[in-house]
Length: 186
Image (cartoon, rainbow, N blue to C red):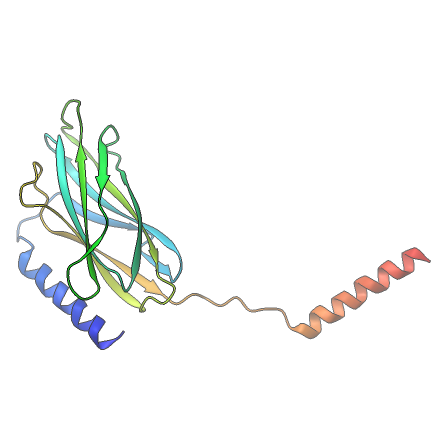
């Protein structure tokens, strides 16, 4: 990992550890899959185990653009009837980007269920540093729904090289195939 990336990751971890309350919260971030090779896509889900009177939410997502490209956002399983508006990721210093996502329903509030609030898709950059990167969700200050700072980690791994067959083996197979075709034509 680059020295600058290490400092940013440690700074973000220090901020998270200082800001996370000591009591348990029903929120979690689930990344599917939990690790991925460079150049692959994944989904980060903000999960609420106890949705209570949810009519609208303004969510802020922070991620490292050295690792990921934002692809899009969709409503989650708990907010399937909601409308969703996602802005464009904006720089907040260094390689960190923040994305504002708004959810709202014209119908009845969602109450007493568990499920994802928002599903966010990313692409792991082909030149992303190897290692862990943190994705952080929280509600904006004036949001109707309170979401404490909640984070999840995505591990970027090296793409596994698929060995290519030996060229002499391919030449030999081609010669056998051509020999078989020539015999049938005679």
